[in-house]
Image 1 (tube, helix red, strand yellow):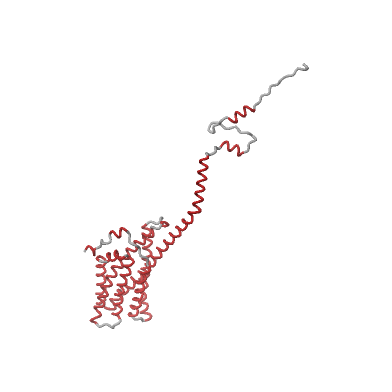
Image 2 (cartoon, one colour):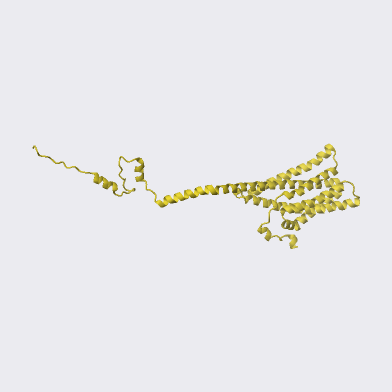
Length: 306
């Protein structure tokens, strides 16, 4: 057997492995073959398909657009929020001012009516009756026309300045400087003016109240507040201010007369001054411009129809 060699066949598997590695595989049906020397990232890249180039470009463009929005649009967004907050605060503060001024004007007027009967007797009773009659007449006939023509804010200014005529007439009549022949006509004239003024002022405050509540809900930052919620909030503010005003101006004269023996003439004069100041304070209340609907129904009032 010397000199005789035995040939052992060697099977090369490299070609088969190469064919197996290069053959296409399906992720749904088969598991791709991996090499033990491959890293985890290389194995992961074979399992997860790579997105097409168009998708990566779209993602890149979206990220660029987002970054550009944050650089350019962010400032405008914050500015808009600040403007909305300022507008909301201004609307609420403006209505608070209106409520305080109306409380002063309305309370002083009612105090005069309450004291007129005890101060002037039958003349005071007739005076109050004339006030209520002319108040109802003006509210039905001419107040709506005045409010629609001059606006709610200006109508409040007009109404309470006319009401000051009533306060002035009662104050002059209480001084005792008028003869009995002049005292009656002066009080009656002031009562007529006061009733007309109350009709205009009450109609104007209702119109201004509704417009202020609608303006408050129209602010984008208040989009969660329903119209009836804003109306309830404004009604609470207005009623509370008027209630405090009436309580203060009605109790104060009794306290001054009983404790310090202050004459009614001084009280009437002081209340007239307060009412005059409050009446001119409506100049600082914001005047809302009429809407298109209000302009269409500008002449729909009993006064113009009559």
